[in-house]
Image 1 (cartoon, one colour):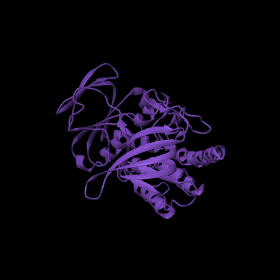
Image 2: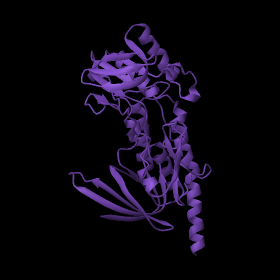
Image 3: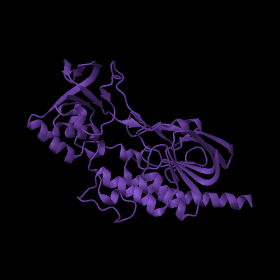
Image 4: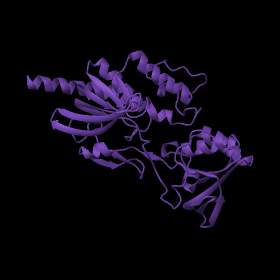
Length: 346
C-alpha cells in the first residue's frame, strides 16, 4: 500500500496529461500522472502504420521536436515522440495503474485509490492525497454500439488495428467518420473484399467543420470504388448480424443481406465519465448529439466541483493541439489557486 500527498494528481497520460505534467513540473508542483493503460494509449490504439491527419506543429510537445520522415507523422513516429518526451523531461507517470475510487475528505484534499499489478501479476493498491485533480482522459473507453441482434458475435469488432488478417475475406465496415473511412480504405487496398455501410448524410458531407472525412482519405477511397475493389452502401439502419451475413435497411428502404466474415462497427466512442459523475461533476450534450461532456469554466477549465479540472479529447476540443495547449494555460492557474490557499491558511 502506497500513500503520497500531492499538489496535483493528473488522470490520463495522453497528450493533455503529458502537457499537464510538464507544466506542473515547471510550476514546481508536486504531481503525479496515473494512466490505466500505456503512455499515449489512445494513439497506440490507432491502426498500425496510420498517418496522422494533423501536421507536426499540431502534434509535437516542443516546437521542432517531432521530425517525421514524410510531411505528417505515422502512429509509430508520434508514439515515439511522446514517449521520448516523457523520458527526456523525466515526467512522473505511473502507467498500468487505474483509478478506482475518489473521495473528498476536506475542501482541499481528495483521496484517490488505485489498483494495478506488479511484474508477476499480483494485485497491488495505492492511495494518494491530492489538493487538485485534473482529468485528462481519452474519449475511446466506450465504443458506441448499434444495439442490434448479433452484435456480440466474435466476428464483430469495435476497433480496427490492421487489415492483414482479412485478406480475401468478406468484410463490412459500418460508420461514416474518418476512422471508418480509413479502415475501409486500408482493408480494400490490402486485399479484403470490402463493403462500407454509411449514412447518406455522412457520405454527402463535404464540410470539414461538420465532421466530413478528410479529402486525403476520400480521394483514394473513391478511387477504390471506381476500380471496383470497394463497395459503398448507403444505409438507414443495421437490422441483424448473423454468422454469415449482415442484414440492413438501405437508404431507399430496401432490405439487403450482405454476406461477410467480419464486421467492423466504427460509429464513434465516448469517454468514461463514471468517476466525474460520482464526484458530482455536471455534464451536458457535446457538439455531437451522441456525446456527453463535463461542464467546465471555459477560462479555467474547472468544473462545478471546486478543485476538479478537465482537459483533453473528452471535452468539446477533440483535437490534439488544444489537448496540448490547454494544460499549459490551466496548470499555472491551478498553481496560483494553490498558492492563494496556502496564503489564506497562514
